[in-house]
Image (cartoon, rainbow, N blue to C red; front, top):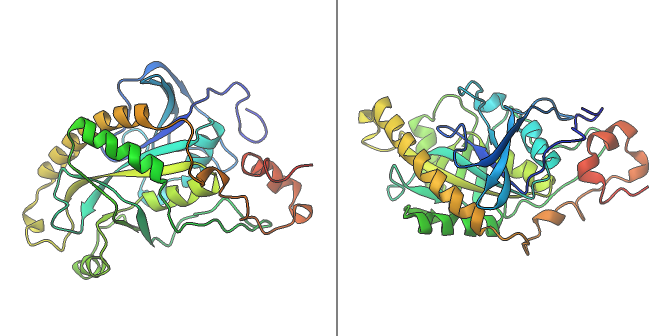
Length: 297
């Protein structure tokens, strides 16, 4: 490893996949290699698994770690996304289990949201600071072209899915109270989870296209039938969803355009306010992969 925590001979990938609850490995990969890396922001959740899927170079990372040992609040989101940047990915397909806030999003259905509401309070959601300021646009936090590929993957795999909607990202690890759940419903939100908002924010700062495939496991506590749902039923839906998600990912990876017309990969172009001359050498080294296009010596 170098001083910045980057392997000089690190494997490279084009597409990153972040697996959530129920998806801890990526079957179907060929030429599989695993690599343990560090980043300027610490260790990612787990080893990175590199391989090929449908002719594309991909890298997989289980956000909760093997054995699901990391709480949502304890995930090192900055290390996870920076590790993807170090690996060379230009797009991230994120998979996560969610609760439903609408009757039509029944368990077993997938949602490809295009908006987020942030209800977290104990996480670092930016690569910037303390001596460099950047404000990226997050008006549209999901890359439309990644979303298109995910929806096409659902259609091609026979998976029921909805395009668009709002994902509420709560702190956790406890689930919502009924008052909170009904509040989110009054806002028109669609699903609720604990992980994807930080990934979307950091991916935008890292100029990586990002999209979420939200797998509905159950209705949130607002639903009259919620209390009758057992853990066994939720696990059964989770396993069913994970099997379907692998088919969707296979098709989405194959269908994602190598060249995209979105603005995700130039998100920092007009976002950095700090003059290079006042940014410390340490910060420039730490954020080298983000700044190299814009801070020319």
